[in-house]
Image 1: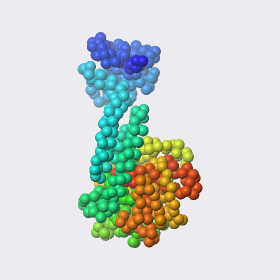
Image 2: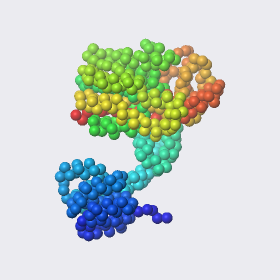
Image 3: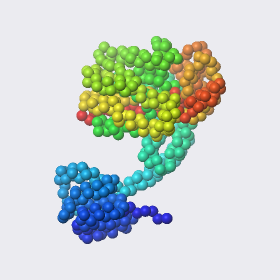
Image 4: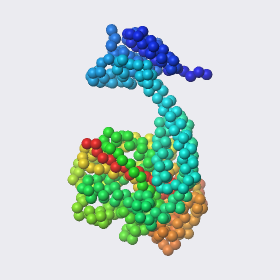
Length: 519
């Protein structure tokens, strides 16, 4: 069965002089009809199905612009390329106002016409074929690399490539390659879990110059060093934001900022009370616990209650507290966000403005409890789509556009990512065991090393001990913990939900973005 040819209408009062061009397009597989005036062109549009119209701007009788307007009245979705000798800006503005897809300036050669037609009619096909070939090549290379002795920079590179292809595939859902990508991500997370188990503890005792950047390095490396150079900083932490989610809304900022992206590893557990407090304190959890032991109470309200104090402590340690004015704001709902956006000019006299934004994390938690949200956000692609839509219409995007007019360096990051959990692990624990799904701390906890990192000595992992027998379980890959009692209840509640706290590329390898206003 032959494929349907794309059908083009070429409108030009001197079409005979373009016969060679028409024949060239036909030789390339296009079905081309012609018209010598606007009236005939509109009649053909009324009575035929065309995929593209090429319209000369200078024609006797009905002009090119008038013809385009009439054609759009008949078929508003039809792509139109205007061909003109006139390069005046006002004409181009009029043509764009009539929603043309492209314009070409005479004289045109066959290759220009072919390029314009392919750009409009075959862009999706060409792009899909290119992406398919590119990913198949990358698939083989990544699969081969998993057998090598990878370092943390290799894992950053692999994670970046996987995230970029995820976003690419969102625009090409008919490629049918997403299952292959998701399977490769699973394989990568198996090996990444082994890598973290072998390397993570060593990182904690190494000089920071010989290990990856960790959560407790973020403030010093990206914020405090800027403040020491008299640069004002807007520091934004979007709770639970993954790299792929950042990539979906980053293009919205291109017109306002020059963007530099770097990467860091979340500490373990990759969860808010550990990772975000490490960011604001510049310390590991066991060090924080000495002064702020209440952080790890079961009451969720205390988990990040001390962030402003931890921030002050870190500024004081850096010798900046007395010379740096700062404002800390946590935004937990839209109303607070829009109030902050409205008030932002009153904070511009501060050297440091810190914003903590909870939307992405709240979406993940609410989805766990809502069948409706599970229907709206069934997978990672839809999660990315919702995050992009939120950002595009959010108070924070509005605020960033305002900040782009001032001399502020913006540092945007996250405290951890999330992963969609699909496989349960049964464990036993007493009533004092923490309730988290991707990690647990308590007494006498155990799990298979294949499914979890088992930490018997918390101090070696810079984690707090709450009892002489405190130990931790940190899940790998897409496993999550459930109790044997009421097993089906908890499995139904948490299976196929987005969780954090464990060991995976998505949770641990995170972007740190520097936004410099274009002015």
